[in-house]
Each structure stands twice: as structure tokens, then as C-alpha cells.
Length: 173
Image (cartoon, rainbow, N blue to C red; front, top):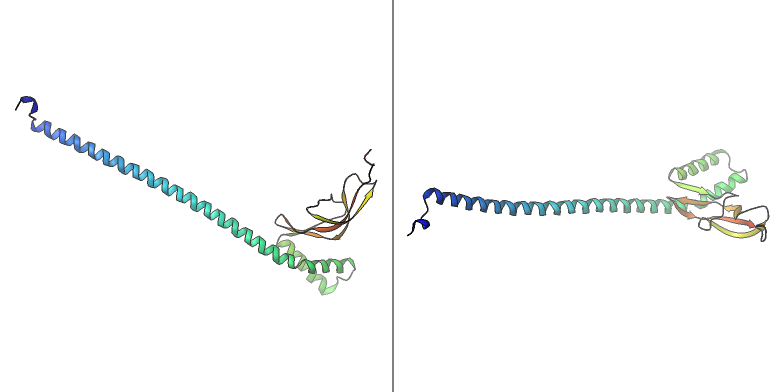
């Protein structure tokens, strides 16, 4: 053997130590990569779960609003009767307090009335059953409200039934 091929015990243990350190570093790098992968997976799962919760909460709220709107729309004929009784002076005594309580409850639950004479005509909110022209108006408007409209949660539950007046032809001079 030549002198170059012979390792001293110190050189031999230093080489083994260096190899062991390199091997340990390689294992640490594998573990770090695995931790990074698992952390990314966990973050994606957390984001997916958060989105799922938001979607479920939104769907639940929409279902709740839909059910409320259905129940409240069934009360509209009763509210119409109360309004007619009030306009004829027949809403008196105990019936008056019951009618007002029902109207208050419906409003508290979020049902809103709309449709007043003079409002701008909106075909998405008003159902026109008659039309007339007048030189006294400058834009299409509600002339008479025959039945109030109702909306709930930003959606029209029932359009107002109205007559409409618009500017007379040639009156736009």
C-alpha cells in the first residue's frame, strides 16, 4: 500500500462524521419539505372549510328568508282587508289593536309596503292596469294605487297594482 491510500484514525473518523452530518442534513431537508407540504395542505383545508362555512351560512340565511317571505306573503290578503277596513272607517275597538299589532309584526319581520301616488313608475315594482296621458306631468308616474305592493329582503313579494299617468304626446316641447 502506498502512503496516500492509508488513512489515519483521525482522518477516518472525520470523514465518517462528515458523511453522517451530510446524511442527517439530507434527512432534515426531507422532513422540512414534508412539513412544508403538510402545512400547505392544512392551510388549504382550513380555507376550504372557512369557505364551506360561509356558503352554508349564506344558504341557511337564504332559506330562512325564503320561508319568511312565503309565510308573510300568505298574510297579504289579511293585511289588504285591514287596510280596506281602515279606509272605510271600520277599523275600531279590539279589531283596530289586532290589525295594528299584525301590521307591526309584519314590519318587524322585514316586510315593507310600497306604492304611493306620485311615485315614479317602475315596471319591476308596479303592475299597471290602466294608463292615461296628461300635460301636467313630466315623467311616467303612479296616478292611483289600487293595491299596495310588498317587498321582503330586497325582493318584491307582490307588485303594487296601479294606474299610470305619463306626459301627453307632444308635450315635451
